[in-house]
Length: 371
Image 1: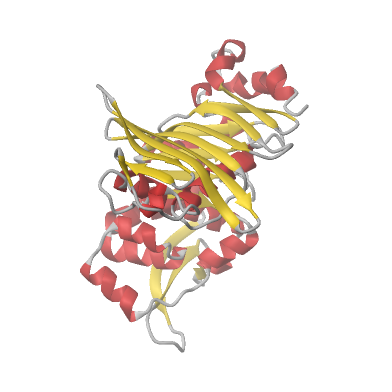
Image 2 (image 1 turned 180 degrees about the vertical axis):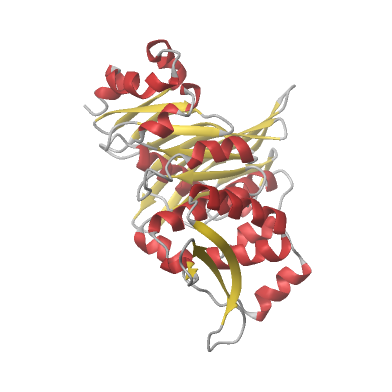
């Protein structure tokens, strides 16, 4: 599954307006000057997924998105009004297009709600049809898609939270003893120590891929291991450790630099994404030294995850090593954000990838990115 096209507007005076953009099913690199709207754009995608599953409220907004699944295209549009009493959905439509026809699944305006052409009793006007009808066979693919949209945060607090030790209780341990599944691992949203412990235990080949690539990125790492830490609590507390060359002591994950934590987290995320997931990263190069920045495009090429990746970056290396066909260039006029595919600028970018970044920053659309 993948987002084919996406549009978002805030229905407020001076609200943010993003032009419709057709995304790539695999890799999407968002580029533009600081303040051009890239981070906000990523946030709107993730908030859409949260709202669809009734996990996050929304303000006055319109979403219009097309999603591909098994050769079919789902078109979902929704208009939301934020009242003093809370969120109200004023209009919603969901359709499914196959090769031969288009079927309307949901039509909704106020309390007038039709599902598969048949009127439904009065339902909550605060919750999306994706959530209300999530158990219906026609809706399940969309519910599954939105549950697999992942927005990874790399702030100091976010890294600390995911890299700290967590106790796994007996219920969690029994669940993975009886049902070992990467989709379950993704859904549980475990910390990085626990996730690597489960991979080592149940998916040793995948664990080995992560560790070997990690050691290639940081060649001063001599050994890695996961083991149970002793803590005064019931359950299991796994920890990931490295041993550096010429250093005798093992170093635990939460004691590593933020850059080393971040690289390991991204490698593990990508290797464990469920089929058809959407993975969102904002400015992945932040806190990474020059020795670690270049791993990302190479790893994607080698591992080739069955997922849609949406990433922002300002770094010349990443921009030069991702083809302009996968670029999305942001240009903001006040609260209106215009997004152009790199293909629209390709004639001015030249054929040498070493010149991509230089030509990009000299292009007026990029250089005058905020008006």
